[in-house]
Image 1 (cartoon, rainbow, N blue to C red):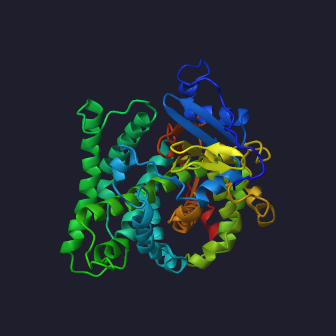
Image 2: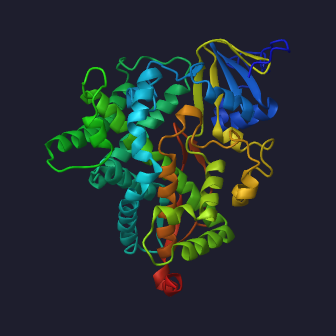
Amino acid sequence: MENTTAPVKMPPGPKRNMLLSRRNTFSKGILQFLQGFVKEYPGIGRIKTGTLSFVVLTNPDYVEHVFMNRDKYVKIQEGGNLRYLLGNGLLTSEGEFWMKQRKLIQPVFHKQRLQGFVQKITDCTNDMLDAWEQRDENTTTDMLAEMNKLTLDIVGKTLLSTDVKGDFKKVSDALTIVLENITRRRQRILQLPYWVPVPEHVRMQRYIKVLNDTVMDIINQRRKDTNTYDDLLTMLMEVEDADTAERMSDIQLRDEALTIFIAGHETTANAMSFIFYLLAKHPAVKQRMEQELITGLGKEELSYEKLMKLEYTQMVIKEAMRLYPPAWVVVRRAATDDVIDDYQIKEKDIVIVSPYAVQNSDVLWNRAEEFDPERFAPANAKGIHRYAYFPFGGGARLCIGNNFAMMEMQIILALISKRFNYTLPNDYVMELNPLITLRPKKGVPVYLKSIAEHGIKLLLAK
């Protein structure tokens, strides 16, 4: 979107290097810093921190420009960080290799195949709810932990045809520690190479090995299995290169499987935790959604077609992901000089596009801080700029599992709403933890009450 009539200028921003400025407020939290910065420099702003230059974009047209020009704005191939965890998987790869892998994996998530996942998601969720029936209703249950366990089970059953319940705690603990360490490392100007054996790196290697071993055990077990599976893992293992007829190496299999294993459950678990928090805080919205679920689904089995007709439930999910997008920031590096409107973007600039900052902007959203699903009613949604709301990213790198995630969240909401009510403790205060993904810092504790105990189950069955 180069403007050829106006003189090119640098984006506005603080004149002093942030390392030397008293206004350096990173210590107060990156989310607060971003929100304050975009209020002072709406649309576009430039920050110099040490030797690095950051350009923060919140104008939806500018965001669109970055997403639609992926050759100009590329993944940062740093000395490690997310690539150190996921290798050269779909989330971290670039160029022709990324395109080939994307085309390979995409069919698993086509809408016509999602129906086949409905029953597996239903079974996993009902297993969790059966366990909930045995819980003391006077003791809180952490929805973040429960959703992590559930979505990990769902990814294992649907995409890998594997039961990973027994591995949940070690996988969850390892992932949390690795993501926390990566986040701390990203915030440092000086980042030691991962091969330097400092205690933090040694600890990282130990927990990444836990994740690697878990995935490789799944792959090795599949190789020994004589049964036939129609899932993502089978596709990855059997596909052959069109030119060389070679199959994926164990390393590439691990990279792709681990990427799906982690990205396919962690973000959805976070999103569901925020949804339950917001519904518990807004009983009128909760009641309206539950009524739609009762009338829209009835007593018959769930189906993809029925789920797609749950308009208000989808509005609730979308509004929750507006306020609390799990993928809260997208970072790109300018591969070449560019001009956005009349603003100069220089080669090697680090471009920051934050769904959290954009979707919580008072400039773009009326009463941005309020939870209001009506924003996404069909008549209202028509007026929302495509890149004022982008919790699943955008452009060619739009999240490959977005339709799967939306369907999964609707099924979980529907089944829980039929069997349980949930309320927050009076003293609970939501705190955000912006790691690689956005999480509730202290989880989301709720009191669960079985609806059957209160004589409402008959009403729901009508």
